[in-house]
Image (cartoon, rainbow, N blue to C red):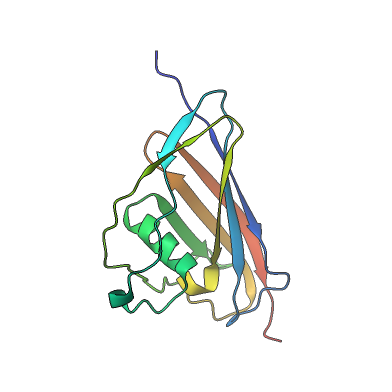
Length: 151
């Protein structure tokens, strides 16, 4: 009998009043909601190597590496339901991803700036959808974010 592990995800907008052109910090929390240990990809991928000439933050590098392996998937849609253009950050390196055990009710947290990943130019209501995990152990999370006019 195969046991199903349950990851529970939450997204929280950490920026008090998000506006276009300024950082929009998001916190993704993944919790093992099952009664068993769950083995997942370790999100700790280090920092970009110096030769990479990485133009974004270390947090954006972490998310970009996880996205390149398909561990994290993020989509951002505007109020009309259209996809917001990704900035296409690619790490161009292939670090070895480790594994991490999450005990029951243990969590991992990833903070990142949404504006480093997507071209957000207009105020309005946006929808963020995220996926963390693989084909068998994963969490799908979504939330809305109100991006106000530029100050």
